[in-house]
Structures are given as C-alpha cells and as structure tokens.
Length: 329
Image 1: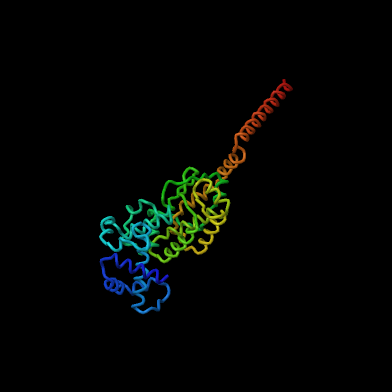
Image 2: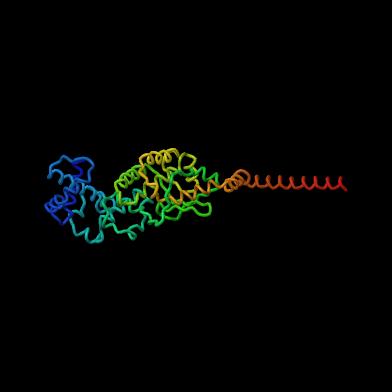
C-alpha cells in the first residue's frame, strides 16, 4: 500500500509545476498544526512525518482526479507526460470540485448539486467538514427548550392519524409537520451510511461553538424508527430507500448511533417539531378519527358495510318509533 501511495506522489509531482522542495517546506511550516489533528501522539521524526503527509496528500489528490477525470486513469498516462494537456481541458479544476464529484457519486443525495452555489468552502477544515456543510440547515432564531426528549415512533404517529410524505427538500433536516402531514426528505441507507454518520457525529461533538445538526438528526430518526415496522412505513411512503438486507438493520443502526450521541435539550434543532408531534398524539380526537378511518373505512367494502349497518340501524329506530306511536294512539 505504501509503495502504491509513493507511486501516486511521483505521478503528482510529474503533473505539478511546483517542486518537491517547495511542498516539503509548506508541510514543515504546518507541522505542529497537522500533528494536533491526530488524537494520538505521532512518534515520527520531522522528516518522516513530512514524508507521510506528502505521500498521503498526493494519494488522495490522485484518487480524486482519477475518479473525476478519465484522462488520469491507467498506469501509463500520456497526460502526465504532457502537462499542458491538463491545462487545456480543465482550467477550472479545484479540490472543492473534485471532492464534490467524488462524494456526490459515493453518498448520493447527501451531497446536493446546488451546494457549491450556496456555501463558501474556503474555510472548511477537511473532507468531513465538507460533508457536514452540505447538510447545514438554516439557523432558527427562537428554539423551544425541551424538558424531556421523547416522542412517538412512526407506527404510533400512524395510529394517531399522522400521514407521511416524501419531502421535496434536499437537506435531511428539512422536516416539516403541517395539517397532520409529516414531510421528510429522502434518506438512503446503505453500507456506507453508518461510516458517514459516525464520522460526522464524532466531528460535531468536537465543535463546541457550532450547532450539532447531524447529531440532532440522528436523535430524531432514532426516535421515529424504533423498530422494523417504523422503517417499513417510511419505506412504503418513499422516504427511506433501504439498501440493507432487512428493515431491522436501519433501526438498529440509528439506535446504536443514538447511544453515543451528544445532545443539548435547550438547543435541540427539532424541539418545535417534537412538541407539535407530542401534542397531536395526545389529542384523543385525533386517535379516534384515525381508528375510525383505519379500522372501518380502510376499504370500499368496509365503507359499504358501515353505511349499510347505519341505514339498518336508522330503519330499526324508525320502526320502533312508529310501533310506539301506534300503541300510544
């Protein structure tokens, strides 16, 4: 693997107009800052540490370029020999564009196409921060403080008459509840989802001066999708696109993520949504209407049966009244 990465460094240096010595000095100037990004102490000497950073950086850049540009694929690449060719066809090439392309193909709907127009990516920390910005929600001015973070699951909301619709928004946190309809954007769950969310979750918990929006989303989904039945309802309404083998995998994933979640009840992004859903489910009238509709008016035959039973009851009452009147008269 190390030999493979070194080959990428050589390829990168062939393509670049900047010499190796310039890169070495650049990394040396940032050595202390770079070492502080690691949770453990790196026991490498200055020269070995700089070499490791250069090789890993070149490897990542070449992977991104080979993913996005077909000219960079293959062992013997003519574009690396004729460096002018890259300038002729890709004058607007940047790490942001390469990263956006790579993550769009890898994580799908998580990285929206229009995101480059909405954010200034010049201040991002790293690739995880890039992904986090892709789902950054609008700031809410007046958030309600929650005494206790609990709410009904999807199945419980369904029994109370809540309808579920696929949201038109591209961001996962764009969840709305209006007129008994809970609108949730599409959420694709595959083998990469757990890795993505765990990395985002860990990074957010280091950001004490930022809002932890992904962690709040994990908490909300874990409360909504407590079991396979909840996942099936969301999938049936086109909200969850489940690529895992079983529905249990989705609920299990979010329950495990929720166990390691760091939340602030006085700054929870979905506090108003949670209050509205709890209030709706506590209203007995909503449950009564839902039960009537789901149990007695769920098919045309049951509707006809109920109507026929009602007519028969009315006729029986009329007959009883007429019989009573005849006896009195």
